[in-house]
Length: 148
Image 1 (cartoon, rainbow, N blue to C red):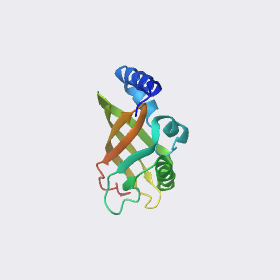
Image 2: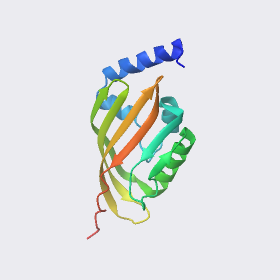
Image 3: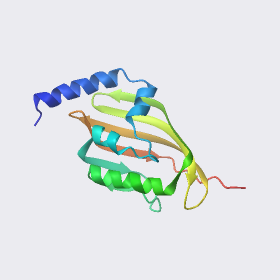
Image 4: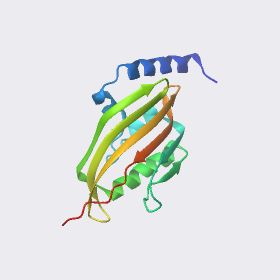
């Protein structure tokens, strides 16, 4: 069921997406380490379906079925990623209809192992009524860099 208000919100979002550039995409997506809850609450549906790819030993891999679960995952990410020296950037994006795919790069230090990491990622977002209703994160998961 879609109300007139949500149609207007979707039109505003579509207009925003049509005029996106890398800087706007960067501001739209949360920085995992800082975990911007207000930004997530603004753009993400309370009943979002959020999937994080990864091997069985990656602690954040799995499915999240609400904004509250996603916020908890961001808190967990902050515990395993050293904020000092963390880099996160949008490199490209594609928008079609109500879907957006964003490609980027991150690097930082894994707190538990103490080893640096680099990672290329892609996010798939599906929008409905001005909110993200589905979000999927895909990572390359390279081997951590050694300190040697």
